[in-house]
View 1: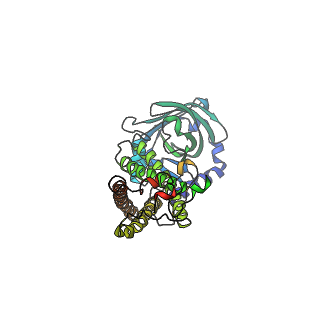
View 2: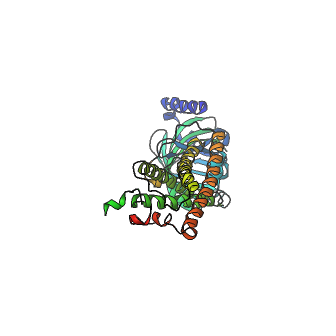
View 3: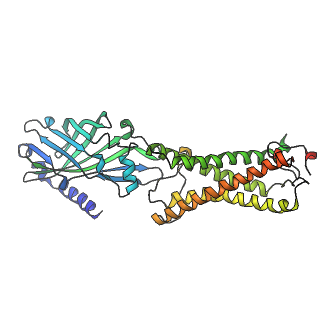
Length: 191
Length: 192
């Protein structure tokens, strides 16, 4: 929790600094490998009556490519291994891995492949792509906010909402919301 | 015939009869559902059946409270004259214990979901959120209430089996009206 608060504080501080407006696209351009050390993929699902179920994926991999001349041609690819899901409750984790939700044994990967990146501000972009889970693919949108850039390391705070029912994971609705809130911190290291 | 809804000193009315059979069906159904849902390999079906079990548990609790209120506010039909003194003495006690189980089973289930660290909300038939009982959550408390619910279920269903056996004994062996008067309000001269 403390780490999380500091994380948000860091993002807030960074956003307040005008320095990013000055980040030249040519400086940031390049290919990055998402580093698990500085990254996290968290999610939460609201519950009837308040509160929610929160968790994170411990294992994932991916790449970020920022196009030099045209940011719209930039690309983000992420692969999440649902077997690594963790909520702090062993029984909940086993349930999420089972065929009730991720069916991790038969579908070991959840993939996101971006199809377009649209700049929405000095440090923000809307990333549209195709999300594949349990053999089903749908377009999804995520908001990416640049939160740090220095010495070959780039960091984005990515948020978005995904409707789980479309991926055959509607178990527990309406007790648990159909909307999954994603909150990701993705740190890329220049290749 | 509104008069046949309430009990008289010689027969059960429709309200008591409907409540008896409705609760009997849910009570036995809940026992079967409870056994099945804990033995499934599909986690998804198990989850859904557990939610259904909780829904029927809350329905049962509501009906039982209604039934006890009805019993307290209504005449209690006397047993047929043929019933022996010992059974006459024991019958109300057995019925009291049966009411106790009807209350204790849904309440212990409610306690079990209330103390569970899984914090799965209770939403009877997806209609509304039933608040948890004000009990502290912990794994040991969940184990305790799981055991309590389990023992109560087996003891309760054993008592129901005895109750059924006694009813059948009255009907087929003693050939009195103890069973039939719980099927439809009998005309007054049949008993007492």
